[in-house]
Length: 233
Picture 1 (cartoon, rainbow, N blue to C red):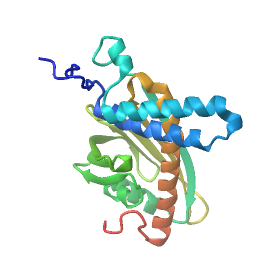
Picture 2 (cartoon, rainbow, N blue to C red):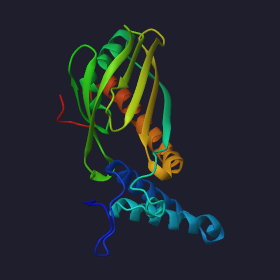
Picture 3 (tube, helix red, strand yellow):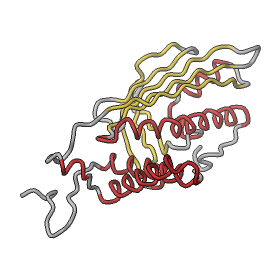
């Protein structure tokens, strides 16, 4: 018996949890964009409102009409990379800054979207992240794949991660007691039939989030003030 089929007038659930979350977030972003546009921009406003409403419907019901019309439970996922690149200089020596990042359990001290990072061994760690809008958490394991002491840390999520991600941080001297950080983070998530459209909406959101995290790292490493998770020590 197929529990996802439409019976008794109920909509079938044919969208996965991650796609539902992505649809709600993307739909909300589209609605906000549409509401901000004036009457002279109706040719952009109306499609944004309609598209945003549909994505919210898709996420809240778990049903995608396009999937149903295709006669499939789910269509093949479209994969889109979200790449974030940011540089910042902090007033701390390079060895100190590197050592702080190398202890991955420190990351939730300044990364607002991270709930916890548990170090499993010298290379592997377990990550827990908060889904925006209080929609729960996701977890994955990651591994340090490249390391040059005081110069570079590179990591990658391990197979089975809900959201595949990778990142690297390069550390360079900047003046007598300063350090320049070059942060590159890539997220790769399945977004189904709305693939590239959702990724294009998420790109500025993820970029803003990472920039904020890096700025909060500067504040933390220079002052010791934890503005994200004050109960984490």
